[in-house]
Length: 228
Length: 225
Image (cartoon, rainbow over all chains, first blue to last red):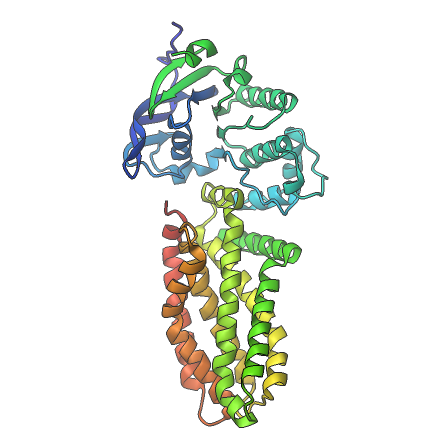
């Protein structure tokens, strides 16, 4: 078994005994893990395994019932939110506005006034910044890429991506994977929650298997992760 | 402070742009208020003197009900595609979003009032016997009282299952002092029987208290699970 060891690297994220309960249902049941920087982690597992809850907890959108998350040396996730980009399963975009208009607005939330940067980010995900039609009229693949652009607009060190390949055609998925590899090579730490782990077979540094609210396995190879 | 201003300005301009394109809030508010004017004008046939006495209540109740329509829609927009989460993960201050929404709703309701006031004047044969300029002050203060609490409670009822019902249930009881002050001040100005100053001061004090409370509590509301 090709288990992963990070003895030498300093962890960028440390999760300790993370528990999240929704009423009587425990979405996370004591997750403890360390993640080092500059790697692409694919978080895999069945529906209800706790993948999205883990990602939302890392993004600071869900408060843990118990346990701690330390990110970039602090447990105050709000203080490091500029270093984190979050892409959810829904697009987190205004359907009635064009891509550039959306990105311009979200850039302002990070204090970025630079339209050229917005245009460059849209171009980086393979879209045309001059496109004037509203995002609601984009194809699913275009919307996912636009959503990725929104998550990347402030150049975060950590990217949290929830199902970026969902309903995306094979060509767009390959393009997105290539972009993620580039970002990882540029030093970003990327977490991808996905049901299509095969998309990341040659890109992910590690596959993190989740089951019933726990991380059950961390491997370098997809097959081992997919078949516990 | 400049971060709040910049984000509030960006959010306000985004909301105005979205409303300009969809016209969801304005259209439904106008339609609703128009119905109230027409139905009441057919139901009653008051003399000019009677009109002056009842118009304050009639006008503000129509604006209150119509505003609720807009208040629900401004936050509903943020729920589609869970856009609010994008705001929550950003370093943008919660108060900036609240101020943008409150100012946006204020503009929408003022636009509604601008369209509806001439109709009220015509249908109810209104003419102010008191200082008419005070109507502008009452209108601004009354509208702000309505939208500041409305924006807050609309955000609070955002995650509830029946938010359309929840908003009036939360908003109307807390708006009673403001509504009373606004109606009394309007009636005072229209009839010229007594001074509206006390009610205007009460309205201003109400606005200061509730705007401060909303600003202090909005972060908790925005990040509630």
